[in-house]
Image (cartoon, rainbow, N blue to C red; front, side):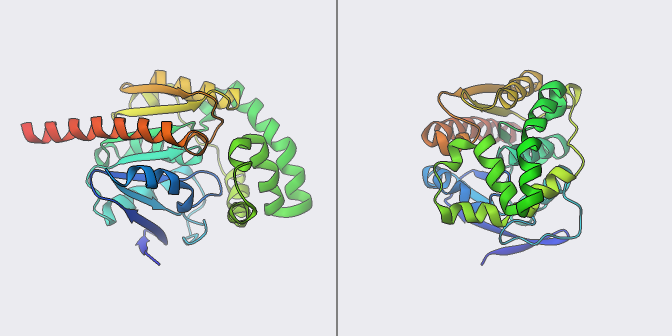
Length: 273
């Protein structure tokens, strides 16, 4: 099992393909396997690296408290440990929030970043508050009566119905097993990113949203795209929150085109120095 020491823990990772590097960061309760469909589509042109975030499935929990900053520091350390040369980081949902923080704090590590519906509620506090109240109304009582696994079964049909309807029970059980991380995230401090912070991210970005996702998540994605200084924004028609599963071909094409553009741009800059 390929693992590597990263800061205060050990991270499980997988690699496939050759070419410019893509680092994939999964969202709530997932692991490296959620990206299998994208790796299958992209490994013919890119070096695809997927990993289990700390505390998920095959990666250790470590000693640092759960936070976006902790996960972003892990991603940076993984890039350095695997000697990935200016990868494009690709994140969905909570993984996209990690990708945003990585682009903000360590832009020199990246050629670009793909953000699929990062739930950054500080960019739209009213929408974020309403969304979290809706989630809490179903997740809190489920957790109180049935624990983390029940919380997962309450959360995903509400926020990610397109994903949840596609998974068999074996796949759902992997999410349920990571239920403690869902509760840890909800118990931790909310991630804070303002418009000015986003405007300072000096990395080319692609922001993706699904037209059938929750209105708050779509609005936040659009707000982020407008605030970023070098960004393009696309909506995948008919997709809910988990765009890379619900519209995998379109997601892969958009990611490949963007990654090819920004890595070529990076190589041109290096050649001119």
